[in-house]
Image (cartoon, rainbow, N blue to C red):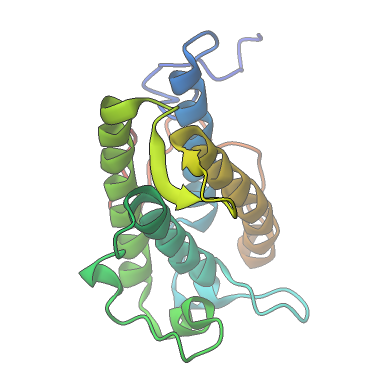
Length: 199
């Protein structure tokens, strides 16, 4: 480590996973670092910035905020417990192709940030409850083609993959908006929009 490397557990880098910890600490830490990096890339933009696309793609940071909010809620309700994502998604329209991406253009920045931030907070609570109930090996509602139940571990790994993919998209999108680049949030970063909290 150098003097400029993030220090795990430091108030300046609350998203940094431990250098040495349990499997749960590393897995949850990796997921939260990706969540925070994505949130940093999307932070502080107006409607125009959140709607910016690149080339022929229709993907925007606003659409990613809404998509990942749905992924968070769906993962920790339908996949984890076999339940509906809840009233917060009552406006979901399955008859509209790519509804979550298309409808984001109609949402205000405040609504997009709130939906995402609240979904992450709910996911963290549900993840902790699932850990208390059965640990990472505990069965979840999601099953494979042979009806073998998946584990909480698999669920979280899938979410890490989802964030890895979309945080890469967010890198390119944010740079196209205002030139912001970087691998991780800078020391002491806190969101200027929404209510995102660190785990």
